[in-house]
Image 1 (cartoon, rainbow, N blue to C red):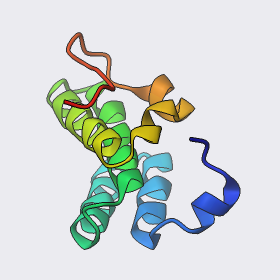
Image 2: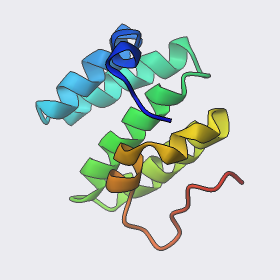
Image 3: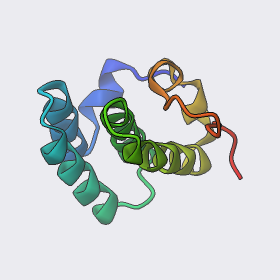
Length: 104
């Protein structure tokens, strides 16, 4: 699975907002945007991907966020197994000995 520019254009606006907030390092607003996107569409694998990646970034400073990152990324893989092939997921996955991109 590769994210193409057209895929990003078709993203839920809340996911887009969350990505922008993450880039601005405003992680609380990013998570709030991703949470709202997941509430609107619990089948949106990319909302889980980007929320999980944001939690992974936050987990570099606070270990408690790593569990959230793992849960979100595993849910994204469950919803769409192609997610495990995204290079951004491979690069930013949580540094955790229990981490796995396998579905349970």
